[in-house]
Amino acid sequence: MGSCIAFHSYKGGTGKTTLSTNIAVLLAKKGYNVTLIDLDVYAPSLFSYFAGKISKLPNKWLNDYLLGSCQIDDFLIDITSTIRNHDINKEIAGKLHVGFSSPSTEYIIKMDQLQTIKAKAISRFVSLKDQLIIDKSADYVIFDTSPGLRFFAINAIAITDIVLLVLKMGDMDIAGTRTIVTDIIEPFRTEGTDAFLLLNRVKGYCIPDVLTTIVDNDNENNPHRHLTMVPDPEQINMSDLEKYLKEETTLDLLRSVPCYCDIQFSKREFLTSLTYPNHPFTAEMNNIIIGLENKINEKSRQ
Ligand SMILES: Nc1ncnc2c1ncn2[C@@H]1O[C@H](COP(=O)(O)OP(=O)(O)OP(=O)(O)O)[C@@H](O)[C@H]1O
Ligand SMILES: [Mg+2]
Image (tube, rainbow, N blue to C red):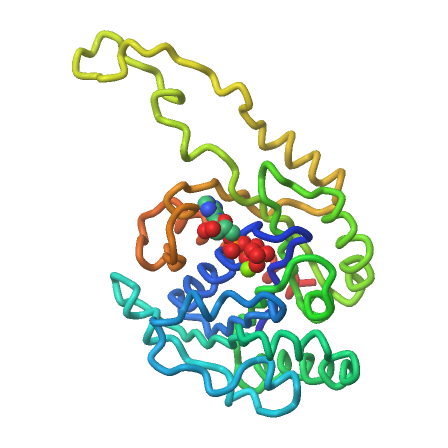
């Protein structure tokens, strides 16, 4: 039986799209049948990331499906061959389908005016998950949601097996995250929804090695040999932070992901895990996948 995972956060810009996309492609690479849905219907970004990479433009969007004017097969796009082209090892053993939300203003306004057909949209949304997992044998359905307490994000939390709440280090919105846990996740816990924190953009990777390694002053070839070691004044004790986050939000930390300058400042390169399989970010994404697989196995044994 497949699993449904939602990436969510109270605040915007925490890394939901970056993490969900890279995890989706790595899951496909591992041999899973994966569907990634851009549920950020109010500020969609996934299509602009893939624009120019996919050969076929969507005829229909997730919005059309939710509004009742098309079926699942009309808006899902098989991008397995696209990601295979971006994988330097060409090793995609599984499949990746993506459902895009339309970036056009007309559609975004329509989604905000759904009030009148909310019940229908919800039932189509629930049916989307069931059809993907039951009829299309998806191993993973991944929702990249919009931040905060918006209609589809709340509904995604309601129907997912595992919610990953992404917090950006340096701007951890503890109060907002707690609100999401207490008001939205807790009521669904008894229905089997699990939730974990993902701490993203933790500092560390960008600190020059000279600050973190012992400098060999006797080695004349070492250009840094006269520099004095400066301990990082804000060094983070991860186990203290993990305890603090647990106390504040009641959730366990699944993983923490460092902040990588090359990712932060790249213009469009978001498939880092495929393009740079040896990048430490890729290793972090694979660690998250292992964590997820363990949680899913634990759940299935319960
Ligand atoms: N681990 C990381 N290291 C460096 N930069 C990162 C990392 N994760 C995400 N980013 C960068 O942070 C920015 C925001 O990421 P992203 O768009 O994925 O956030 P989001 O939560 O989806 O935002 P929104 O709420 O607007 O949808 C992007 O520029 C992305 O490249
Ligand atoms: Mg996003």
